[in-house]
Image (cartoon, rainbow, N blue to C red; front, side):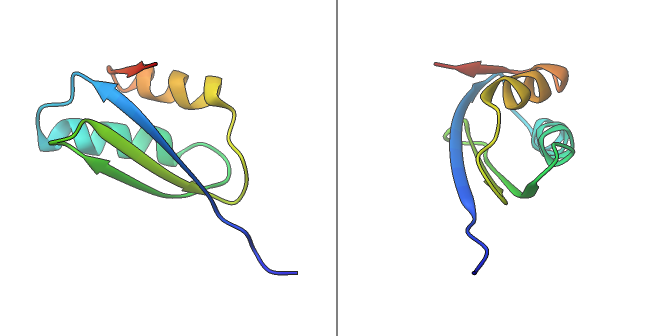
Length: 72
């Protein structure tokens, strides 16, 4: 059995600078199972790689905690 990574993407509003990227990366990276967080500041997208499916509520809460909002 190999490890199967799960990738999910979210559109996030309010991110405008490198501090925003750091805040979102830190909060989302703290979710259990998350192995990588990539923030595309220009597109307003957050791409999360994890060891399995993530609870969307937990992701939304982490992004909210960082001070931003998930769209959709």
